[in-house]
Image 1 (cartoon, helix red, strand yellow):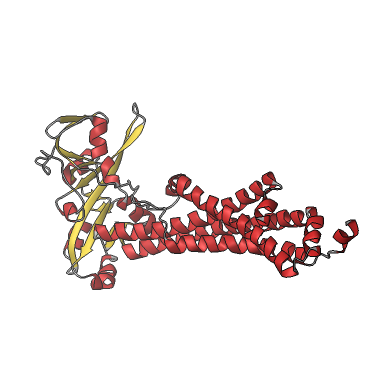
Image 2: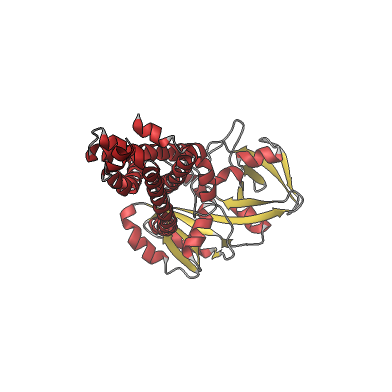
Length: 384
């Protein structure tokens, strides 16, 4: 009871101390959760795709592969004969060619992404499900729309669809059910049609490769690297690079979080030390009526613990209520952001955050508690 009464003597000052500690705990917790969620979600999404490596044009391989996996256009293209060379490799089970082009819609102020692919592309998209009445490409002028694209264009299977920028008319052969991936916003057409439409005859954006046996990855990569104008990038390499990039950003952010934690520690120290100074007479009276130094040490430590507990509770509440804002911000910075949630909580993360908060509070209250325990009862006795 004395500890609680002590905290409510200066409610504004203590509220600011709790808020500072809560901000530090929320930042630290969000960073841990984002790192955990990003690594787990990225691994699951890449595993679900069943692609072991990508053949991309010469240049920055990781940027190129990331763009392809997210159906984004590249400035360079592969020669068409690269596809035949890949399919002739004895280790390759599926080689799916892709041509990805961006079509700006000036009046609507948007950019549509058109993807040319063939039957092999279906083997690498097991999550695709067609809506009722849909079929695969029935003619060179067929188009399959992602669910979001179909809603924007207000089209159903069998409808005619005129693309104003290319001035070409298509017939909607199918609409994809929602998958939560970038496919929901895409326009899919036959590969040959895309090559003619966008004037890339015989060219490809990339080739996605699934191997017959994943243990053949190194051998297959070495052979595919010899194809002129192309380079092979394994999904494992890509994931490692992306996680390292996120780790670099995380290290910077954790440095900032550490600064916030240190400031919180000093704030707790200042708050409790000021409380001890203001309550010198009260604490001396407690010593005069029989309170031991250990009891005063425990009293101030309890106040520090209560401040820490309040800061931890508020910080975790901030993460759970406002975490979606942190996730939205992270998606604009992290490479190849998966469609599944990035901010994923777990018991170890919560325990680490709570432990950090308690350590900060107790360290900040250590000296004020020691100083309170060293007070002499003499001043109180003189006033009696």
